[in-house]
View 1 (cartoon, one colour):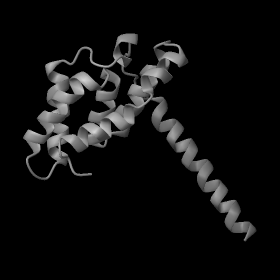
View 2 (cartoon, one colour; view 1 turned 120 degrees about the vertical axis):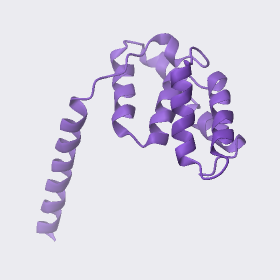
View 3 (cartoon, one colour; view 1 turned 135 degrees about the vertical axis):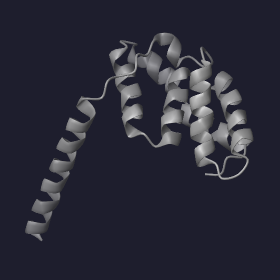
Length: 135
């Protein structure tokens, strides 16, 4: 039993080191204080990336459902939330890490980030549910 726990501990240490070296070379996405406020700038390229990533995930009525999601996300989510949502649809961990690193490097006070973050996950789920995107 002791040998098993030793191997398990070594596995988790190796996994942690691997994740550290993986994420340290990821370039952060620049984030400003305006990017964590609901609404805000939503460029055509960001909207197209969100719709395309969503449509690749949706099985039926992809463009219709994903256009609904993009329209709702433009007003109900912040730019940071939309970047994370797009990366989640694309299943790109590196882009989620880049957005998180950009948020950390932005210098925005933690209290402001926390207040902007409250409920964002629920808003994302509500948008997907109201636009009929199956989980």
